[in-house]
Amino acid sequence: MSLANLKTTLPLLLGPALFLLTLFTEPFDAELSRHAWIMCGLTVWMAIWWISEAVPIPATALIPLAVLPLLKLDSIAAVAAPYADPLIFLFFGGFVLSIAMERWNLHKRIALLTMLLVGSKPSQQIAGMMLVTAFLSMWMSNTATAVMMLPIGLSVIAMQSQGGQQQDSFAKAVLLAIAYAASIGGIATLIGTPPNALLAGYLQNVHNITLSFADWMLLGVPLASVLLVLTWLWLTRFQFKLDGAVQADSRQIYRQKLAELGPMQNAEKLVLMVFLAAAFCWTLAKKITEFTGIPMNDTVTAVCVALLLFILPVSLKSGQRVLVWEDCQKLPWGILLLFGGGLTLASQIQKSGLADFIALQVSQLGTLDMLTLILLVTTLIIFLTEVTSNTATAAAFLPLLGPVAVSMGMPVTMLVIPAAIAASCAFMMPVATPPNAIVFASGQLKIADMVKAGFALNILSIICITAACLWLVPVIFS
Image 1 (tube, rainbow, N blue to C red):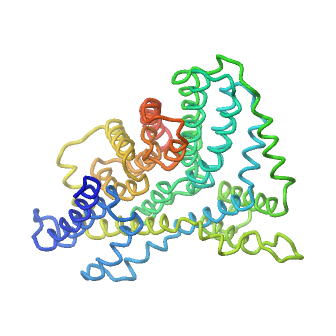
Image 2: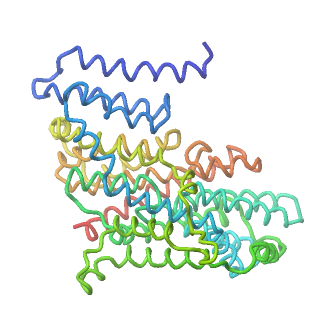
Image 3: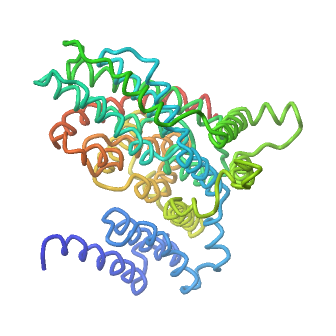
């Protein structure tokens, strides 16, 4: 058996084997119920498969649906309920909006118009690319954003003709800037990256804490902004010392690509109006409710947005709509299944008493101060996510960190929020995030380039996340 096969086969067998062990053995502690003991085995099984990707990540998320009703630990209705959690429909609406922007090239027009406003210095061009990449990643998947921005970045790189070390540094800085900004931008909104939505669903279902779109932006936007500035400074001033030579003005590329898009179509205008309306409703939901009496809800807004995009006609003559259902074939349904599996796992850990048992055991180990605990959790998640899926990591760890926070006598938000954010801050390895893999596939980066730049940004992220959670989280989510 080859090493590659062994890496897949070992976790494939180990996960269910450990679960079966809990089925045929008694709990090791008298305070651990039979239900909680089995849930312990199920959690380990799912965590092993999620982290190793021995089977597709969304498929692992279906395990609770199959196992829990068969073992009579809960009804199929109760187990299936989290797979239709309101937060899943919030993300669904965000995905549909993203698909509409891609379908009619609105995202490209926004990117090119923004890039026309920046200067011609290398550092200014990189700042512009990071700004537009991060903004689009707030509303679209970071993968789609990176795929869209990469050709623009490569065109700018190809235009610079002086060659030598300066050109090589500029190329690397552009590619890393696109990848890192795509990941950082997702932190800013609830729909920007899956771990954020998983966090919101976990807090609502298990701890009855509502995380609204606007509240999250009060934390996410400042944090993402600081990380963007620090990333830009690191790439352009320290990692790659740019602006040392005059470079060609890349704005002619942007004008050419804008000309290729042609004038703004009706469909683009409709998508832009729907996008602005959605952003307005998500960010000002509480104010709208106070003023109109209409009970605004982030999920309802998302579903209304999706419906509008299927209803609005591009042309009354042709009857063509902004979106048809076939466009949704590109929708990442696997992520929605993963949400359901993660939320079900969290709910069952709480319901079985396993969460209380974990909290009790941790409380007996002694206490750590809040700063140390947040630092430890953030560091663990960031470096673990370098080799695992960020969404799967969040799904596996959030249900376990909640009880730890309770046992330490601190608000649950103080531990699970930094964990969720940290899952989006892996910058060292090509396999860490899809944007990293996408820019690495261009062939203009070495792993050493990404590791060298990414390690420093990982450390900066740990510091920024810890500081934000100590100072902002208690104020925003009190």
